[in-house]
Every structure is written in C-alpha cells, then in structure tokens.
Image (cartoon, rainbow, N blue to C red; front, top):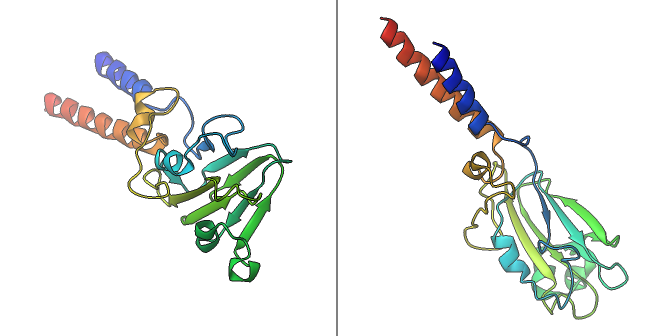
Length: 186
C-alpha cells in the first residue's frame, strides 16, 4: 500500500505543472523591441508558430517616436489604409511603446503600424485565437505548438496550458490504480 501511495505521489509530481495554468504571454517577434520595421521578422510566420487562446496577452515593444500599434479590421489590415471604410476600421490605437493587448474574445485580431510605409513594409500581424485551452492559430493554416520555455513534459502535453489536462490524467491513473488494488483485495 505504501508503494502504491509513493507511485501516485511521484506521478502527481511529474504530471502536475510547475506553473499555474492560465493565460500565456507572447512578446510579438519573440525579441525585445520586436515590433520594428526593418527587423527582418516575418510576423505572419511568427503568429503561425503559436496557438493563441482567449485570455492570452500579446506584448508589443517598440520605439514610440518611430512606430505605433493599431488594432484594425481585416479590411484595413489587408489594405494598410486606415481611411478604408470612412476611417471606421481602426478599433484601438496604442502608442506607449510597451503595449499589452489581451485577446479577450475568440476571434481574429489584426494589428498594423500606421507610420507611413511601415504596414506595407510588413509591420502587420494577424492573430486568431480559440475559446479552448490550446489550438487557436496564427494568421493562417494550422498552428504548431512550440514546447514551453521551461521544457516541462506536462506543459508540452497541452501546448502551454497544463493544469486541467495533467490533473485529469493524474486522477484517471489514480482511479485505475485504486481499481487494481481493490481487485487484488477481492
């Protein structure tokens, strides 16, 4: 019986996440000041590398005297023209240089830099997110889920949101072990 308890405790320690489940935070471009024209960052490719979910946070870092961040409609995103649709295509304007955008709804989000030539030069990113834990997507195609930075196996199982899945798996294993123990007693 003590061996069984030790096995269960070990399993829980292995599967239970080292960090709490919740929203993930993504620095756009994966580098400081990643929201930058001429940086060589392919923002569409960057977005496809991540699986975004409701509650996740995008962090845009840039030099505010040289760039800005506008959340826009898809039409404005595609045209890079904020005057499209009578100027009603801009949802939110950010100008701080360190903007944290919460993906509060399961929908598409489109962002551009409105400085002259920047959007047309590639400073735009489209993000789709899902209502579930993982499995949203970038601006197109199926996203791939990168392992979390801490490399924990439990975090990799659920694409960075490990809490509920690891807990359920541990409960199933515990139930199976208890069932086996009861059968041995009978």
